[in-house]
Image 1 (cartoon, rainbow over the protein chains, first blue to last red):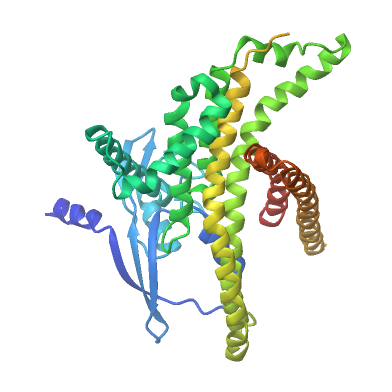
Image 2: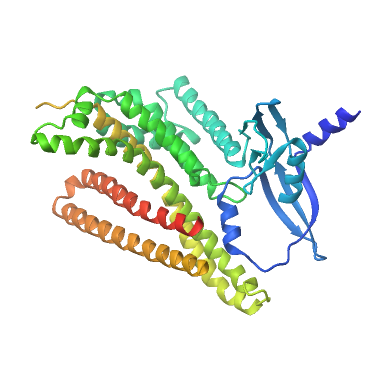
Length: 348
Length: 77
């Protein structure tokens, strides 16, 4: 009986619970920060009830933790705020740090690795599934009747696929373009979809997390080094055509260059998306800062700032939709450029 | 004393963000000037020029974003 109850409890991952609203002014920095970092639950909304209570609706995502004592563990934390969750985690023998990640208790010596399915990893899987469905549909339709004009969703994506093939892959990769085309297409569309998903309500901005962009950049880094020609390595370690002393100076510079390229790739995407989100949140937040910022309710000020704030948000949002596509394009383009440069055979 | 240091750090971060934006703005401005002029002179090469422009703009922007990220880290950490 107890185990059935426990099972039901762990399956109830959608939680609708009552908790007290915090009345302590408005901390905008805190709100901004929590919008930008990854979480272990998918918080939908809070509905205030008026009597100092609120209903919070959230989807709890599973914690998947490896520890050296119990092995792999799979559990949910059902608390509605950080303190409740920390207490539950304490009962299980873990420490919940300030970002909601599972850590070992300070005075224990077991190894704890947290690979939970967080909001961002869940949404990455969703984007992956969407892409799998979308592109297998398109590919299958193309395979079935290759000589008929594209129809439906195929006619929207075919020009984009051709654009990546003809404007990104072929000019920079030459006759090896087809070998790298699947990677470039995946990269371009994944980043584009992830960027757009981050702009819709309730969703996490996947590409606004440095670990995601860094992982993508690492893939590009590995591909670049793997496909590096003899000339590529020759240029790094023994730069041709310069005096002997300069050759030695060029070695560390060139080695640094190998690493700064993917680093810039990761930071560019991360910073662009994060900056856009900060701007949208900041402009919308202006209303709330005016309303609650000083601890007293200033309704007139909030109404006064509203048109300005909404207009600016609209403008930034429109730019963000363009940026979402441009950043995906630039990431794929630079990947093609880096791989192309590494593969190039020089003739001295 | 500590409060003052935090305030100074935020001041520095703000100034740094502004300077990085100025640098990137100047760089991309010069780039746009050059490419628009060359497109006007040789419209048939506009596709190649546009590609090179976007690529270079991405590099300039990348450098500026390094600066902005450091400023963000100063404020957050």
